[in-house]
Amino acid sequence: MKKHSVIILLITFALAFSIVASCNQSDPSMPSDEKDSQTLTAKANASVSQNIIAVDEETFRFDYADEVVRLVNLFRSQEGKSPLKPNESLHASARLRAKELVQKFDHTRPDGTPCHSSITVSYMAAGENIAEGQKTPDEVMSSWENSEGHRDNMLSDDFDGIGVGCYEKDGILYWVQLFIGEN
Picture (cartoon, rainbow, N blue to C red):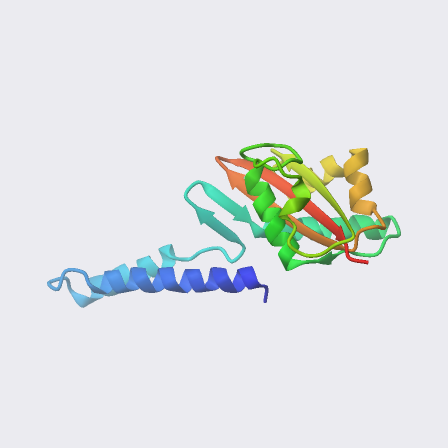
């Protein structure tokens, strides 16, 4: 199980527990069958998708990021290339970059440093693809596949690792692929 899935599950259980606990502290004069009904409703309302973390109007779409990794490796295999290995640290860097794109849609970070400064693992080569507004993994992959520079990054023999971030803010999706070559 991936780290983010475990964290999401823990958040889900904590949220469900706190809601259930608050329901159990309801009006003492309330009949027990009504308390049970409130508890079941609270449990149902506390469910959180295993692959999405939402904070206010901001959302990290882990499910979309995972699908982009799958689609990149499918694309690479169709072109006779070996698959890229997902890297959790690189995924975290890609999520950070995707969130930064809201402030500044550029390969330069909002603080003026290069995009690769977000990468926290050692590498010999690095690349970044960014996109804004595409609504699905298929749509963003189509955009990247039909752009020479983005396509070159996805098919480069210089890279063996990948991290993907998908961040939603106010209904707009921001996408980042980070590539590294460790060899």
